[in-house]
Image (cartoon, rainbow, N blue to C red; front, side, top):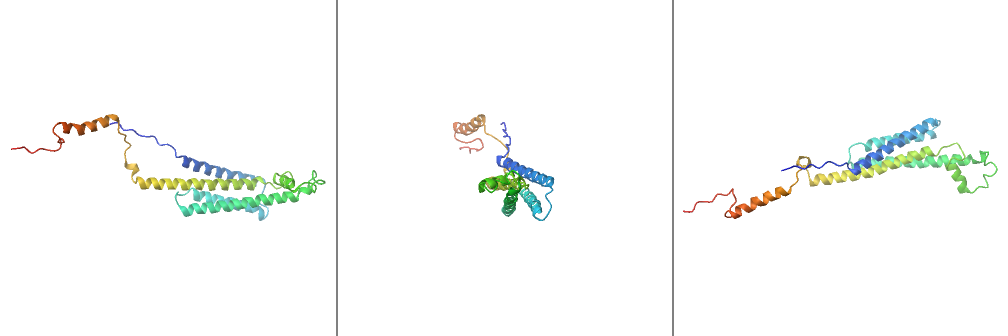
Length: 210
């Protein structure tokens, strides 16, 4: 009998979780690099994104721990949501700083008040006016969002693993075997031959009749 072994395929949910975690790491590194190049550590307000980065790193470490822990997954999501809120606050705070700096820009000094509010806020958000960058807190929020999505895949993986364990508690001990057509013929022959020889299987002995 020939044993047929099936090659293990990569779990798509596991790959998705790893990819989202890698994107989170890239977001953390990119945000830290941009904050460092901008010397963003003058004053208590500028230290807020650094604290948010530390919180996001702690959430990523918890996420990389053992899967299937519901309280741990909830804590990771709560920390990521906290970082996301800090990111939105940073975007708004930088946009307001740029908005206040609009009248000081030489290009808009005479026409700033004549512009519509939406256009002035658009210039502030896109850093057309003002010195405050809005990209750094936005990258922080993107990293937090990818981590939240990674926890969703982690819950799906843990649920599937638990269901598979309940169905097959000793899957690793079972050999990978498949029944071929020749095996089916042998089995059918083993059942049919005793019937043709007198209706008794070969393992059963008949008592002699006197």
